[in-house]
Length: 121
Figure 1 (spheres, helix red, strand yellow):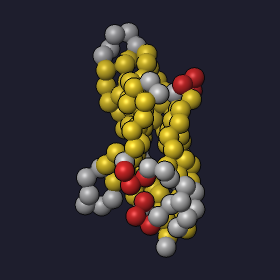
Figure 2 (figure 1 turned 60 degrees about the vertical axis):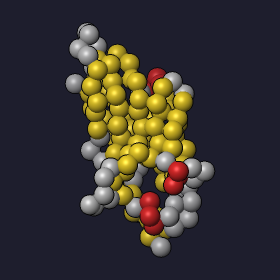
Figure 3 (figure 1 turned 120 degrees about the vertical axis):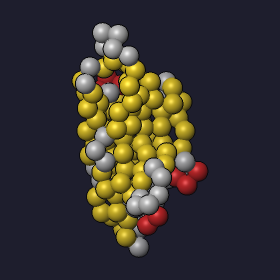
């Protein structure tokens, strides 16, 4: 019913920048929360940056001052600008959206397929 398509991952050196995009499409009436999580092997998926309501955002302490989340409501798209990247930022980054579906079909949580970000030292 809803698809999240991510793009923008890749390989960069420490200190570099990458920009991730996530576009939501499908049977969307409105979007509650939307943002980014990341996961490394053997570690629980963790919040990176999320719009928790309206324009209110929350960030992981480890990325504050380096990462910026933004959104284009007309396109149901969120972006994650990642600057001053560190090797410890290496992970698979997942887009997440909590969506109110059309036709009173309720509220559901969706995940993207993930995009790899690798930061070399």
